[in-house]
Image (cartoon, rainbow, N blue to C red; front, side, top):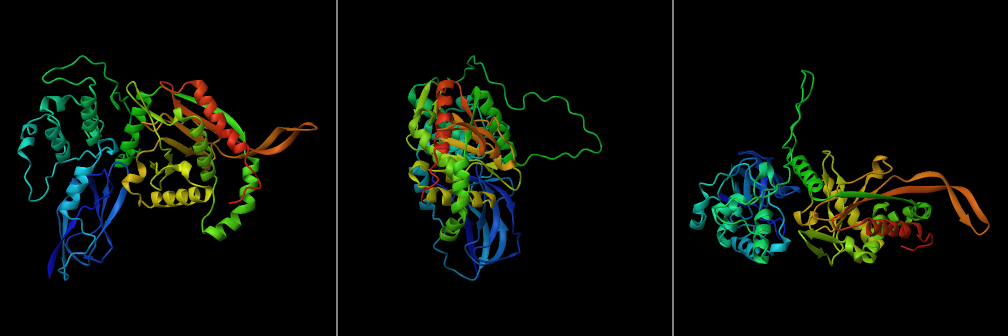
Amino acid sequence: MAQFELLLPRMGESVAEATIVKWLKQPGDRIEADEPILEIATDKVDSDVPSPVSGTLLKQLFSEEQVAQVGDVIALIETEDVAEPETTITEQEVAEENVTEELLSAIPGISPAEELPSLGASQPSAQAGFKNTSRFYSPLVKSIAAEEGISPEQLEQIPGTGIDGRVTKQDILDFVQKQRSGAAIVPENTNPVTHPEPEPHSYRPATSVSGTDEIIEMDRMRKLIADHMVASKQIAPHVTSFVEADVTNIVKWRERIKGEFEKREGEKITFTPIFIEAAARAIRDFPMVNISLDGTRIIKKKSINIGMATALPSGNLIVPVIKSADQFNLVGLTKAVNDLANRARANKLQPDEVKDGTFTITNIGSFGNIMGTPIINQPQVAILAIGSIIKKPAVIETQYGDVIGIRHMMFLSLSYDHRIVDGALGGMFLRKIADYLEAWDVDRKI
């Protein structure tokens, strides 16, 4: 018999830690190879960790809600096989990943509820000065602070965007970047005069609870969504524009080809990839919508990465991203949309698949809504809401004069950040999307 050390696996280029959400197996339970043993969570993605070997779970080395680093030993499994499988991640691989991680590609880490150092490893002496700070910092944040020469006093002044205001990995990396670029830096041992933005949940009106009311605590993902939405409204002045588009040609075209397409490709074609294609084409025409804002710096994105808001069975929301969406044909977009949506609902997404979006689309029409005012997915500057397609009478211009006919109509809603996207740009961009949809070729081959 031998003991196999189960390591927290690599979950993406820039993901260094994860929260243990739930143990699916308890000590003494039999485990088969590739059987899920626990659930983990990064910033937004929940996923299962399968066991690479068959055996019996001996010990859980992390408790639920604790945070583990990539490469940490999280469980011990008794197995008859001495040799470890090829899929085991070595310490060298983990080290190489952390060394080659680029600053701008980093994503926020999950703030742990309780610190738990890696087994058998002592904290570097450079982090000793952070032991007596008044706030909680994860080992990763302390390590970055030590490497970048950030004092405990400076660390105390960094605004935290994590749960309970904790400093996340992204917070400290943003601070380091601003420091290197010469932006305003919080000096040591000083309390600069600032005009802080109101904190989420800082005002809580009194709520009466009767004996028949049910109290439901937010889950981890809902808390993240809540904080993200409140922050977006605080950061960006939202403006929403609307247009109505005649999509009769698209509806007729899809009805005609959907059976043959499914038989040939093994995929159902929905309206979503058509909307994504139109949005990507419009972004090429108006690239100043494909940006993000860092203070007074406009960051113009080269890649058109379109996120699609996806409702989960839990009632929460996640936004998987189609990278370089303008490079796909309609078949490729259809396959990408179906794959990401299916894996999102099954909690099978990888962390890298929900990051680096530059524009977001949300299909509220699937819930019977005709229009909406969506909240911008920071740090993007615009989000498109697709309303339901409804048959209604409309004026049709013909060479013989105007006539009334039954058409398939829908509303498009674009919310945008008025700090950088003015009404003219937002309105023209939205109209261009509608133009592409209305000009659909009913004889298009796919």
